[in-house]
Length: 112
Length: 115
Image 1 (cartoon, rainbow over the protein chains, first blue to last red):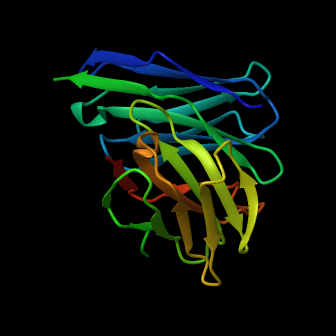
Image 2: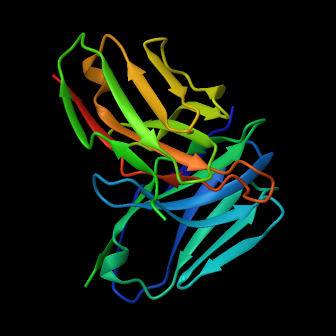
């Protein structure tokens, strides 16, 4: 059974700081790993998807890495902005029909 | 192109009642998945449907059921509602093909409150 853990549960940083969010998973036989952003009471916005054969993906100020052997993924946010404040969730896709297992999220607050 | 749509946005029910939630996937997507997200937690997988057949089921009681229609839209039904069913219910669609790598696209969710 896949289990996904995110550390820390909450993070507060001053504007402009670079930061790293961590995601770990127990079953390395994943199909892909996806990072999402969720604003309070809203649905999920896809940020980055890393295929199992890839090591990293980049989009603007975001960079996500994947190390299947160690069961870890990181989301790097450069030059953080107050608009980045949200909960960030990682999700691992595995199994015959790619069942998706989510972590509990990291709540990020960027202070102006 | 329209994204994933869900209806209704909010719903208030009392214990013991039944509820039906609806989801329309992105055009061309044949896979729909349902998730339950209680406050402060990550989404929990309920069902996945692909080509109108159930392909996966999470650890939820039989009070939860779903179906997918020929146009790939989907309904989630919950019977005999309990207070603990209060949550944000999320629908996600994907192509579920080798080239899409199962990237999930989520709707805005339906907020269900059970009193």
